[in-house]
Amino acid sequence: MKKRYIISLLLLLMVIGTAGWYYYPQYKINQIKKESVIDKNDKSKLKQITYLDYLKDSPDSTFNHLVLGDSVAQGRGSEEGGFANKVNENLQNLTGKTFILENQGVSGATSKGLLNQLEIPAVQQSVKSADIISINIGGNDLVQIAKEEGPIKAIQSYDEVKTDYKKNLNEIFETIREQNPDAILVLNELYNVVNSEQKYYPATEKLLNDWNLIAYETALAHKPALVVPVSDALQTEDMDKWLYDSIHPNDEGYARIADKTITTFQNQSYKEAQ
Image 1 (cartoon, rainbow, N blue to C red):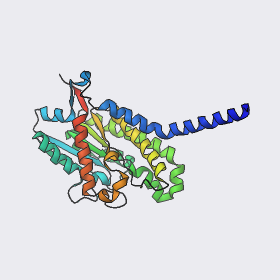
Image 2: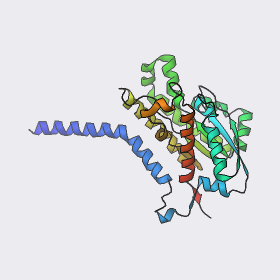
Image 3: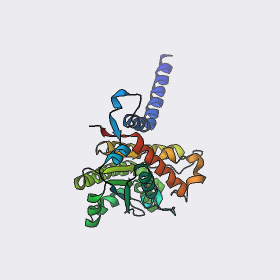
Image 4: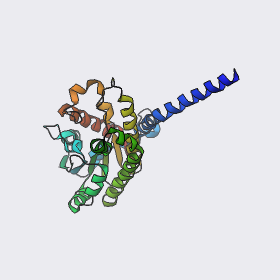
């Protein structure tokens, strides 16, 4: 009986440990989201101003919006300029200011590729003059290995690729901050394009939560910066409405990303009011 009890306890601990390994990234992301959003019922946060308030109250009448990253940043699948163009239109309507868009997205870009792109003098100049820098990067880091060497090699290389991505993303933010300490950095979450009914869905959710937790922690360390919860806007249950191909959003998908970006600007704290 005692032996059976010990075995049962060990099995329970294994289940709890596995569940913690799987759910911890999402739990941590939810905690960061909760702490970033201004709670209007919390009097201690009433003095904080949102990112949108900051843009409204700025003496500047024109803002430069730079977009960096991969084909989603570039807007592949859109006939209307992707999410960034829609973000600009919405910001102009809400603030009465002018937002000038420069899209430097590169199809197929990885985090290492973006880091290399930031060494180009013309790109550095764009970074220096930007007021808002939107970034969509990371999806190709693992996909590239899967395409070149197969899914088994991608799985075997997961920890290494994850470590490299974390290092590269931190260096991307540090490089941008060296050139521009004040720009608002807007990093998109990665989203899932695997239907929840497919057997690979849990594994892809775990991967994306790992990647997105890195995004949230990196943004926290390089304020003013925020992460757009794109995965909330692009749910797998209605992919037929927002997916252009097997990966990229269509115009409705990009509109959802833009709407979620605006909501994030409206709800997150930029700084304490003076």
